[in-house]
Amino acid sequence: MINIKSIWENHKPTGDIIIKTRIDEIPHLNCFAATNHITGQHLYIMSVSKNVAIPELKNYRFKGVEIYTLPFEDKIELYIYLLDNELKDIFSLFVQNILEDIEPSVTESDAITTTLNVVSKWKKLFDKINFNGLTLEQQKGLIGELLFLNYLLNNKKTSTNAVNAWTGVEQEFQAKDFTLGSVGIEIKFTSSKQPRIKVSNERQLDAESLNELFLVLYSTEAVKDNGISLNSIVEQTRKNISTEEERNLFKGKLQLYGYFDEDKEHYGKMYSLKKTFAFNVTSEFPKIVKSDLPLGIYDTSYSIEISAVENFIVESETIIEKI
Image (cartoon, rainbow, N blue to C red; front, side, top):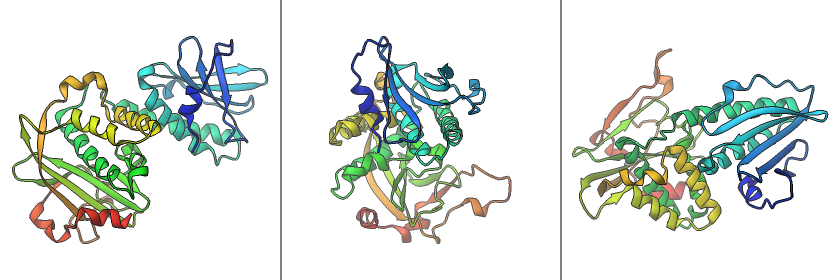
């Protein structure tokens, strides 16, 4: 994997305003990680021939990121410029995604088309980020996902790939909350006195191309003291992550979720974990998936009674065994 963030971090002043490092891992394309030496802002540059058609870019711009082109000698340079340094961890994930997707491109035109497709996906993700803090339901959902992330971090078999496996923030790519190879895991968190499984759309329990799909439900109750808060589980996760690179990745994914440290004062509500349920979502598991719906019906939400799926309960260790 190309570590774009480490390239930026290793940039040293050269006397130029823009410090550029060519990304040699993609030798057939002219791609650069760059830093504005004056402002410290990061950017990504792709240089292509003048005869490569690049569409109007005004519809590709989004919060904290500027996208534009500049002529350079006999080339055109596409700039993706980070304006808000608070978003540098998200920006790293964004550019990483571009590099991974353009690597198989045969021509510069293919690479530009692929780049703008990735930009469009990430624009949708950025537009969904709540920069004014998370709602209570969003906080609960994030606590649930971080509880399971810590379960993976604390298991030798999954600890090294746990943060990468957290794909819940990539919902625009129709990912499951966690994806490890051909195994997917959906996470639910409830503080209801009568726990049930709330499914928000027909994609969540669709195994799609997975060999195995599991659902984990954390049943909790709200408490005043000695419980789990969003802030406490975030700090616990940071301590459990062993490398700086993974902590940066984790921070970027938190920001994609809408969690920013400056909002911490709003995330003190605590919960006590009563019980953890794990279910094997087989073809017989009661659910609604896309193939069940008439044409034109989508985003179907529904609830499942625990008593209706007791036969599908498995031990949490079963999930690890299947990975």
